Image (cartoon, rainbow, N blue to C red; front, top):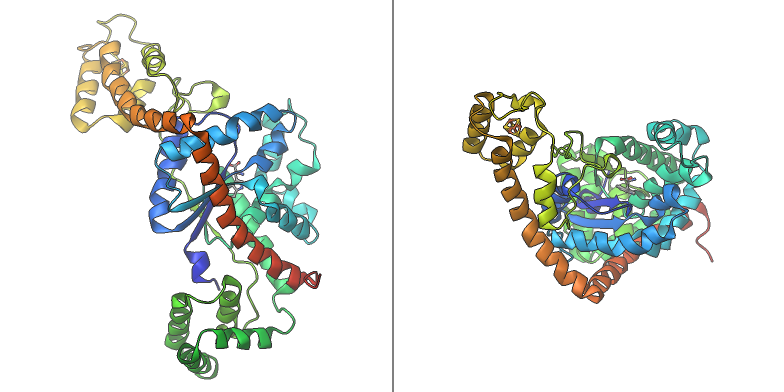
Length: 404
Ligand code: TRP
Ligand code: SF4
């Protein structure tokens, strides 16, 4: 069971661990820009998450948080459609993390695949910490605190969304029926107004007494259309309609972000740790230099040596940036040694420069006026906090902590 609020809500976060690059643009960011037109979106800077691996580096946060949001804005993430905020400004994430930590078995966290993997990859850092073990639960709290229905993530994060579903299920199993549920639900029915309340009650009876599934659907549609009830009350009414208790925490679904096809300068995945990136703010002269010095098919030592695009990282860039005619020209010219590699790189350089130029112009505007960005973040925090407060109150109530 889920509510339409959840079904319309998307949440995602990004760690502020470095400059955003073309890999982010073609993977995560373009996806966010698309989603913001289709859903109510919450996008946040996951600074507490970055802390789990970079706690020794305060300068990182000072430098990267604002710059990251500037990059989001510059590529077209629209603060009018999405709330943009900073995790550490919303203490409810931490409170929910703490509350949930009491009911989550250690084994659930030890079994998360990224735990052992990352410890091995990042063995230079000390990741034998409480925070690092618990970070998937913090991520679950990030998601559950907004009752988000969809979470756009890369393949490496799907297990975390799965954990989040299990956490929600466990919570709902333990606390699903809040005390006095019947009365609060009936009060919520009255808040809908006479006409809607009567219709709701009739549909509820039709479903519960006669198993009329059409009535259930109509009842859910009716709730969706209600403007004047809170998210909490809506959740209650969804539960009451079906005969369950109040559904406290919504189970989210991962929206798998298609893997970016953007290769790095060496043909591996573009990633800061491989040192093969073109950042969104890369000076355009450097873009040209970097592409010009990119390795190509090693068989092409001389201009007269034919090559094979399949063995060349530049060809992968053509697949993102070039139209069919240009790609045909590349394949033909490469295999017949009819074009040189520098010549072949030219359309790619032009396309990337054309892509980055307007982004950098936008970013420069925001860099000149960081107060605008700060106020966008403040506004996003306010929107997020309002929603987070409502959930945390319901969670406190469910756990018996709501009286004070
Ligand atoms: N853990 C994610 C990452 O490393 C970032 C993140 C934190 C996140 N909280 C989230 C993503 C909640 C989606 C939803 O990339
Ligand atoms: Fe790569 Fe183009 Fe050179 Fe062929 S011609 S090796 S595709 S850069």
